[in-house]
Image (cartoon, rainbow, N blue to C red):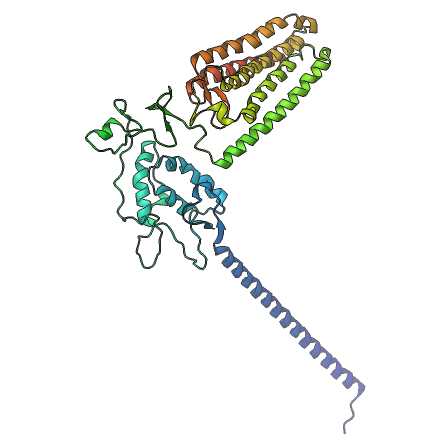
Length: 443
């Protein structure tokens, strides 16, 4: 039996330990690499699952007002136009609301909603667009009217991209289930050469020779046909706008009413506090600061004019039955609200000019309080007499009309000419004078 020395034993043990260490390190490296591979595979699987989940359309209830009650309640996003939310789609689809209101085609509303709020059916993952015939009928009815005003049918809503009814590999929707042949295009409305004999019942495609030539326009909804009123809309006599704005949803009207009432109330409270402070100690408000008191009084009266709607009601002030008030000039709630808003609103503009002029006298010309106050009668003459003259002129011209949104009576709601003459022109003059005195004051 051979005798092994201690040095040989140590060498063997060292070789054994080195071999085991290398094997252990190699095994650990292989394990780590396998672990990283497993993690990478898990991450890739999670990413694929996430992408698959993102690609699946999500069903949600339709919230766009124009597309409610069109035959289905659920929609899926993103839609074919790459809108991710209904808010984004609603902002774009409501641009077509005037076309829907004038009913250029009975299929337009359904077609637009099928594009912007596509139907969502559980357990059916394929898209379900409107049939090509629906698009063609909508385009035939509305494209001529759009072209008349310089607009083309949108390219991304081309009817050729939609499937035909009856194709085996692609289902589609047709609300009316009518013939696939589109209706003949309607000629664009033309201004009549002579007044219509009966605008209410006159249609552009009426029977008889020359029917369409004689009367291309008619007083249709949402406009209201009237006989006993001196009312008209551009191009149509004996036709009036409805009492409440037809181009706003019920939610928008309610929001406008609350918004106006809120700020009118805050204005009334803040200005009333200023007036109360002045009445307690009137000596604290001397010139050139005294016009601030009269500004507060004017704004307080304007706020009361807007708040009167809460007490008297929208219909009592701004409406005359089913139509909006026009040419109101007699004693009524409409006239009272007009005086509160218009007279004191114009007076406040002049008091701004007086305030700027008083600051100019005090800081620019170094006038004292007594010297500025010595001309107070002229300030009041300008601030009260000029608005009074303009108010009387508006009433005599019969230019007072109702506001279908705010529920008050003012001037220029239905006449751009009256708005320019009685509102914009005076405000521009006052604003220019205010800026002029402020500029001189600074220099």
